[in-house]
Image 1 (tube, rainbow, N blue to C red):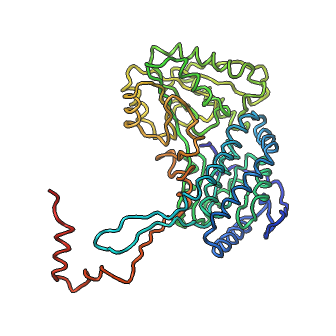
Image 2 (cartoon, helix red, strand yellow):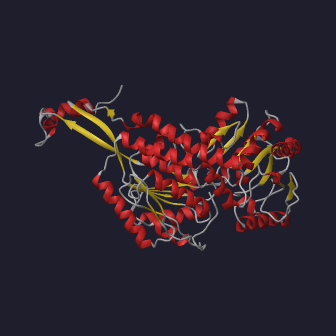
Image 3 (cartoon, rainbow, N blue to C red):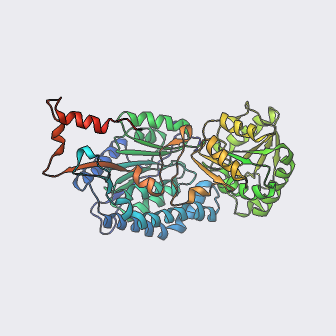
Length: 500
């Protein structure tokens, strides 16, 4: 989801102790803790979970409400902190794409928690009657959450909502590239929870690598595919189950039955949100060769409608110089290899990390922009002659986190759904499937494994415990040895009979 590595140094921001009212355990800001201290913190959470292994519905709802109130209380601080980490980030984008989905996911969990926690009845085979089968959703224990920098609030607290709803405790390791936001997140966590319930652990790439190797009961990582492989390998040392939310090259397919204007109006918001630094941002566009000029014109027009002045504040910056220079170098690489670059808008202030949307034509597989998830405001446009060709192009790429189809043709919609793979799909929209509280979110193959959000998040952080209950009458003993009795023949005749 983000292109980071395990080899970048982070400057610690000190450590202080913070006490919250009505909490049994002081809450620590973990910015300066050693790895040994973090292992002790994990041990305390495990001990606390062992002492109370099944949180009640009431407690879980109280915890979720406390988290909600703390987020709402600190929302202005969060907006300012995220913008400080980015150099500039649109306040509305932080509200719409970070804070609001966090609150909505909390409300959804509280509303449906009783239903999710219900014991599920299952059928009993005739051979084992009378009996009862049921499934109990049991908390796993302590969950590790590793979150990235691009949506530092929602991608830290969203998984936490699911973990708390499922009755767990949690340690959160946020990105080292959002230190200002991390400080406010720590304030929020410290107000809502004691440190043996939830704690936030800061640190550099080395801390992240060590964190991923801790013996959690479940580990959720959001980030790049490359780093996800390291995380999974580290977690395997303890057989820790993992949920990997990665990324990939999410395609947009514009079919011939829709106008360029119809499609681009909906594509451009998803691409320009957070300056393209979104794991499900459209990564490249497939349009029929006859529509190319109309598509280019539509992108220019709609970008200027959304951002008449890109430096006015509504358009976000690239997070840091390293990411900005990566995008610049990928542009130069594409130009050198024959691509045509079309900026959709110009801006005067060159001393910023503001980069308006750049369209790229005539791209090929030798270019960096076609080999990796772009994660920024660069958008290759690839033409096709037939829909079969377009579907083949999608199929030749690693399975993406998202796929977007613009078409009103129901047969084509069904064909694309059945002949392509992606973690999630939008028909005539982009990115907004992530904000649907009752839809699971996750990748497939290189774009991730496992799901969270909605009920699937609750299930990810729960153990579905199978329970068989028998009474005084025990029919199963009729099948006991010695074998060869008439009852065995009757059982075999009844259960192994051929179907006519």
